[in-house]
Image 1: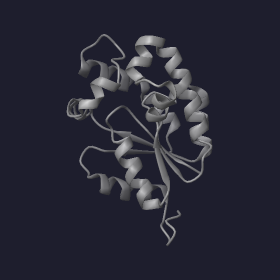
Image 2: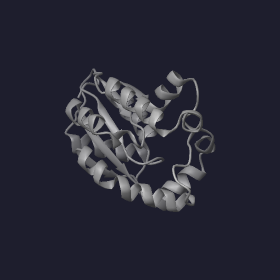
Image 3: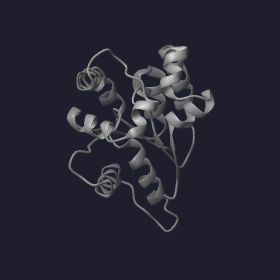
Image 4: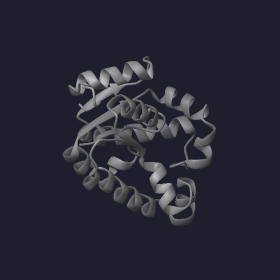
Length: 179
């Protein structure tokens, strides 16, 4: 059964997916990378050339497929839980962890990542901080409905966050790294 990490951009999904998978001895995958590989273009290009509905269809297909895999830590796209069928697949297939950070922290992390602007489109006509606040508010109930646990990523190291996720999900490690 997979562990799916959800949350807004730059809340730590990819970093923590990698670290959790190392600790568990599982595979990990960033759903956005799968989408880009299948489409042969960046998410920003998909939005610009095909539109958001086409992207959301791809995202839902990839999410449903990945939720069926065992021993996988999935870094889901920030909007993956927007579709009811994706939310249900995530919850039914395994553990869902909602990673949270303050809007200002998200903006600082996004600004510090050179690939964000190239790969990720703006989703509104608002300023960067206004967009983050708006979308986080808009998605809060959806993230809350989807998640089994919520984890604040503000003031802890990635390793501390992995320890917290293990503890809160009741995971343990044996010699094979299997929970």
